[in-house]
Image: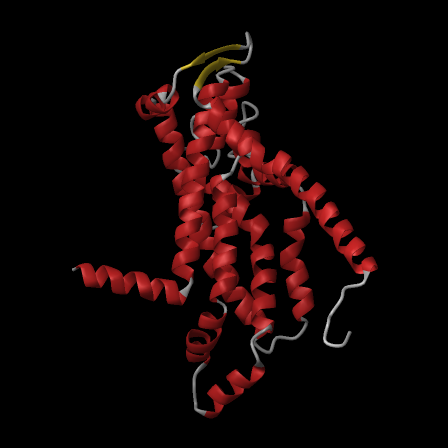
Length: 311
């Protein structure tokens, strides 16, 4: 009959096979990604000694213990300090470099490749290399600073400088990734916008502020979220810097993930370590949610109007 759209039997089999394949992948993803999150929440409710496998349900006891634990509060402070510094340094610097590369500079691919190379190097050799550079006695950094008349600085043992060692390492390694992502976003902006602005006499700064920055905001939000997650999940840098007598004392670079690993796999307090993981997860989740909402101009304007209406 005319006017009746009938699907072929072969197409139904094809769609069923596609959904079946996706179901297997989604189940595997849920088992490897979603289930562990709920498992961690469940584990945090127990006083679990991994050495003896003794489990005692204590409810929110681990969370109340964390509030009284000065070591955890110190680790949380250092984590916030390092995470925010990494974001505030990496994103603006990557944006400035990406915009400079995008603006009529020859050999763009060459510069992008040079900045991206550190990102593909594994973190362990990167930290070991920087550990030699930061060494107080024979480090290259102190040697270079000596030409400026500066005394040797204890980059790895000073409580004020050791977090900055982690910040410098993380920024150096991830800067190229952010530059590449932002460069792709800038390449997606039509050239006609810049040409029209140049005809109107707009300066380079005005073009960046009025054209590039608003159109690049979704990419900036993405890069900011990625760097915030990496900044708050710093562990390898702290672990290697504190791995021997020539490195940092553990308390100097004791970030939350480092403290969590120490409690879980050194002192076998798995319930307490799980509670720390839950707190870190909630902090990152809330900050990510706020950034995504604030990065959306329509949602941001709606929130500001509601806040003004309440006043």
